[in-house]
Length: 101
Image (cartoon, rainbow, N blue to C red; front, top):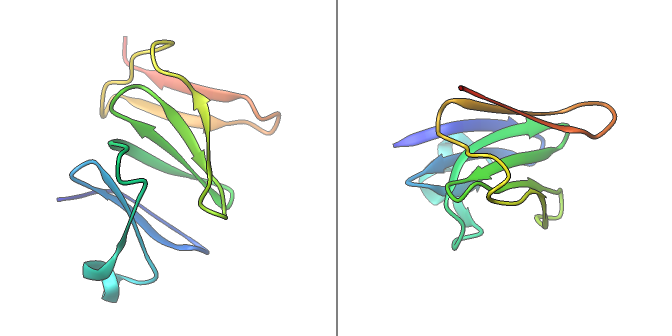
């Protein structure tokens, strides 16, 4: 089951069974590379040329062009319940997270 598909200049990113994958085209989707195998992802969104990714333990990462990541939000600060939240970074680099009450 594919969820949360994002396409940018670095390829096609998607989540399947809480794993993050990346491939260069839909033709090669069955050969997609698993990224950060030990992290369980629930959502991804594009942010410029980077990827915002949330995990099932409440973390939000920003994944950079070089495939390094930085923690934007640590677990415990808010509860992220899939699929009732969204993420956004404004032009002043503030992270906004919206969720259902």
